[in-house]
Length: 100
Image (cartoon, one colour):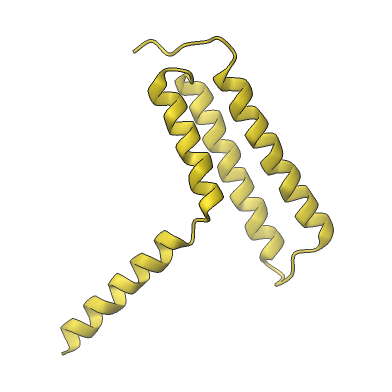
C-alpha cells in the first residue's frame, strides 16, 4: 500500500511539473527546434534564443516572488516575450543556414 501511494505521489509530481510550462512556452520552444531542424537556425542562434527564454523565466519568477505581478512588471514581461518572438522570426529569416 505504501509503495503504491509513493508511486502515485511521484507520478503526480511529474505530471504537475510537466504541465507547469504554458502552451505558449511550448509553442516558442517548438518554433526554435523546428527552425534548427530545418537548418534555418545555427547553433549559436539557437543557444541565444534559449538564453532569452531562460532570462524571461527568471524575470517572471522575480515578478511573482512577492505574490503579485504589478502592471509595470506585466508590461515588461509582455515586451520581453514580444521581443523574443520577433527575434525568432528575424533569426530564422536572416539567410544564414546551418551546415548539416
